[in-house]
Amino acid sequence: MTGVQLTQNLNVLLIQSCVTLRDAMATIDTGGIGIALVVEENGRLIRTLTDGDLRRAILGGHALDSQLHTAIRTTGARAITAPFDTPRVEQLSIMLSAQVRHLPLLHPDGTVADLACADHVPEDMLELQAVIMAGGFGTRLRPLTDDTPKPMLSVGGKPLMERTIESLQKAGIHRINVTTHFMPEKIIKHFGGGQRFGVELNYVSEEQPLGTAGALRLINEVDEPLLVMNGDILTNIDFRSLMKFHREHKAKLTVAVRQYEMQVPYGVVEAKDGVVSGLKEKPRVTFLVNAGIYLLEPSVLKHIPDAGRYDMTDLISRLLEAGETVVGYPVMEYWLDIGKHDDFQKAQEDVSRVRWAA
Image (cartoon, rainbow, N blue to C red):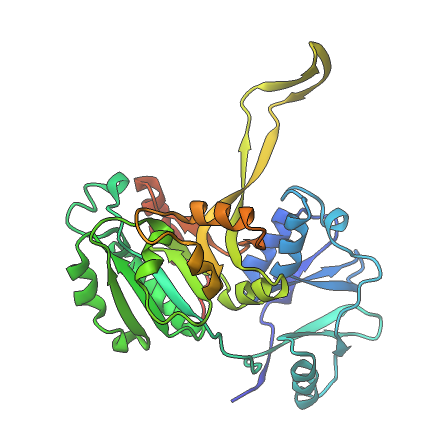
């Protein structure tokens, strides 16, 4: 039944416009409800802030260490709000009408009294099917993968792939294809046809590794978008937000990206034709890296050759050459590529503190 709840700890959601994008992201993650409230020093509400706002800032070229007010509009911004004494039924009506899940409740002076949260707002079902790439050997994780496929390694007491399937099911994605190659019988024995997990599983066997795009040739009856995921990823990405982003950009293929920073361990000299124009001491360099999650239209499959290994990087290059629209979706939620032993250990430590889809 649809209802309204009030926030248990409002203070953890409050930030000021001088914080960095990184701090804002941490606030949204800590709050666990997908939103932060930007306020003035006196507590007056300036605007609400979602992970979608942060994604747009990153796509606009802003680094995680940029201050919020330089990357996102904080003056003149308008938020959907209501007086603090608005009846619950009316709060819910406002949220349903505006298709929002959160409604700041304000005192007469504009300061935040509370935040109302709808426990359910009707949404369209996600009309797509998923593909989990589970055929890799997991060489870098040996000896853990000597007799266990990497997606079947236990993370917090259950196989990694089980966590992925649960996330897909909770997002309303029930048709899931699983590509297999290395010890497929262990995957099939555990998951069966998927009924126990509320999904329909279809297994696609690769006799020889076909690559992250080549394996898609083996999937039949594709008449809706395909969500393709590497099988060694631990994430609580919002699939609905990804689909919305894909549609808004009218993309043929959307690749999830993650902002990655590294610090150069030396002073960097800026020079042209031997003339020094500047010096930066151990600067931080920011990149967008491939997060191993893709959303593609069915028409894209015609670009995949009929035979041989073919990776998503090859497919993206071909689409760009053909003038098709390819966009990058910044992942603001928790994301970890479990490729090495250190990553596997970090997954065990993180899984209990990460907020997973309810």
